Length: 297
Image (cartoon, rainbow, N blue to C red; front, side, top):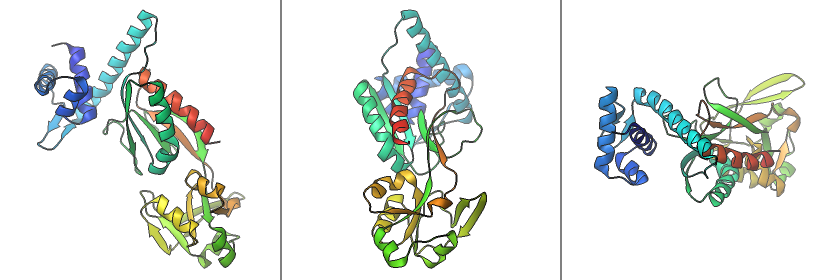
């Protein structure tokens, strides 16, 4: 059986997490997909997928092989483009991830522009407030807010965001504006109980680092909820600058203790390719960079 075909099937099954969905994606029958995977496993003498009645998951050995397979298929595509003297328009499928609110506000406009420009592409957007394992979950491109650990992931910095404290003008009129982090003990505080929830709020000024343990009057499981609560005058909340930018611009929220802000947090576009990325990935990153570099000024 053609090895390139087997590799294409492997990628489709891994990314779709199922044989039936991979068959639909490739326009093949279910038995054809099953035969291709079985033949590849027999040739390699290794199990590539763990199959149950409910799901298909790639094995550790399969995941390592998948990385090489994607690089090989990318090299083949690049070689074909080079020998033909043309650059093919992106086509196929991309899986993109970003934090929930950032994805809605800043990544989705980039996706819309990309799909309008390249109508033969499809995109699956995973907007989640947790760290996504790009290999495990079959993600091609991600947006990561925060400092990156050393890894094989390729990254392109597109801007920075800040951690800010905000409250409504009405709340500050009634309760006063805090002048130092210690003043927060006299105020009603609101916190988002998300993946990075912490009762310790950090501050920095004049080469001093302060960490204060806070007792929120209100917690909620989404950033949208706590920002809306603060805009309705219930207290002071902490958020990333992009999350509150619309409400600050409208005058519904005001930044407080700005002189105590910690160092800005970098924003990167990341992808998993060790060498040259596929055309579709390069085109999407270029498109998204244009949007984010304009937004995160």
